[in-house]
Length: 305
Image (cartoon, rainbow, N blue to C red; front, side, top):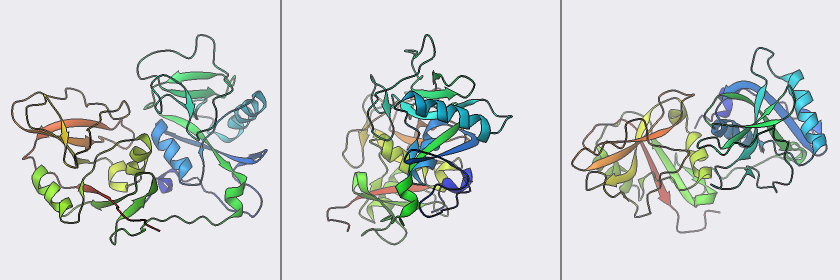
């Protein structure tokens, strides 16, 4: 698979015991600033793919260092706001860091954080270092925080585990994911049958981490649509999943504008990205619609290692 990391072109050079030459070392972390404007989820994904996360800030000194270095490293023509790892996507009520560390320091601008729907991620202003809330799908520069230890070891990733050839393994869900990115066209039933022939089902998404993993597939990131395992047998009154898991409609994958349509008959759900920078969303469609791409998910019932 071609990972989104290639698109962001962080240009990292690994040097033993030190941070990459394009980054800033502070305490035991390396900070990489990227002027590419993107949404929060894709920014976090690009950080994960080099062994880190969007930066978490636990004291005023670190906050000041990030702000000062942002002015030096970011494109001067880009807005002086950058994503840090603070978000409410992991919890509807509380702010958290994407790296799971304690949320023990804040530097909110006056009248922040705003308790407004969709303002679930945080930006740091490089002009004054204060934080502001923002819609997670707005496009901004970002800063990755990577432990220095990452550059002293050679990481290994169990991409295949016991999955079939061409499938990838994702440990948090203990599942394999397989993609048919072209050359196959089918309605929802045909796509589900196609997955079942490999012991799988059409994709269902049950966590933000799984959502980020999904975005690592290049055909997802480069704006296409594909069937999910969610369907309604009664014109959208109730929703079910082909893998019998409870269907979920989280804030980070909202319904597309005008959906669900509540048109009579059986309806099936499609995951859609109009452009690389756009907000992914779900839309309901006639289940007989022909869609070219399929993403299957297979739960492993044995230890993959």
